[in-house]
Image (cartoon, rainbow, N blue to C red):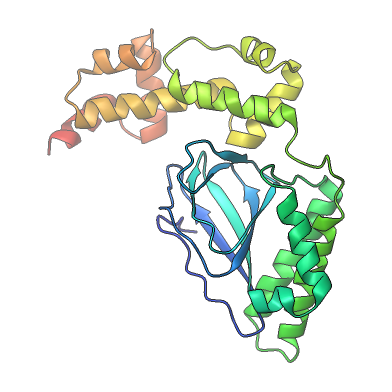
Length: 277
């Protein structure tokens, strides 16, 4: 399935609930925007950074986490990895049609700025609610609107009943900081043991969370960043192959050639020639 490079368009139907799926490639960035409806983000796969207003600090949303966004909030997102984002859009009229519906939404907003992270059992229930809403939206079956509203209500109740400490754990926050550090210093030498020590986690726990956030192991992720930088230097900045490999962090040129061809399907020399065309 093609991944989006522009934000998904959302138009709320008369019954006040819409679910949408948006798949982004790494590097996707949504421009600052505001909407006339409320939103609930569910990061089904990948990880992204959420920014609000003019803030430069972000909320790091990882796979399995949810985050409520109040209407008219200026916000934008930047993907850390390839992302599948499920969005539940809710109108004012839906949330105010019954007093308790608005109370549920207010409870979710009170948990900000931390993201909600349900356990695996509740996450499965949430995924099922999204699937049901998406399926009913695509059908013309009698009563689809009622089922959609009921599933949205069930989802809000499930999240509002989460314990107060059901936010992104400190371990995820610490590993996310390692990911950001790698993005900035991919050319340096990194080891899994050192990174786990910096995150105050066991090697096993660190590796599990790191793979959940990025879809890769630490050294694979580091090499991926290095290769992207080298390809940019060779193809767009006229750097020599040896110079690009060195400045990107590779010490062994033969190893660099093997990894480059494996990732891009062609050796660095061909990549450089195409960049000159």
